[in-house]
Image (cartoon, rainbow, N blue to C red; front, side, top):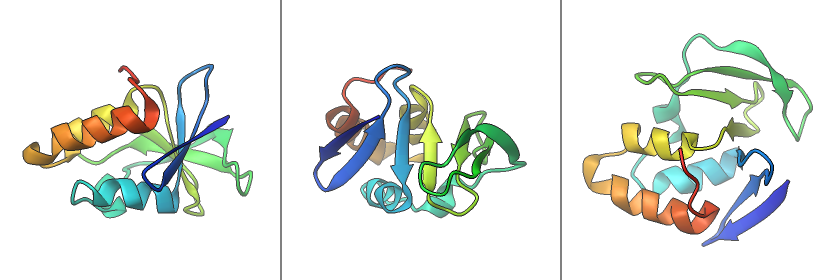
Length: 117
């Protein structure tokens, strides 16, 4: 994992799979830029996944974000969440207010590079 820092937000990235780990505080900082909160990313019908939290080593839970078909993995102890390649952009595009989508996607481009979807 590589740590990428941009404008007070650090994201752990995997160069092999281009996935992202966002600690809880990092997620809150990112979401605040678009007028969102972590509550906007509620996951429905979570199941135990194969990945483990890098902080507590518990199995991550995974499930779709409410109102989307995007499945994310998150720590049951709220340490953070894992996003596969392209999921951050997909969630922003589906969840952010229309006037905030471009600004958040531009910011994410600086934070994580031109991660595709």
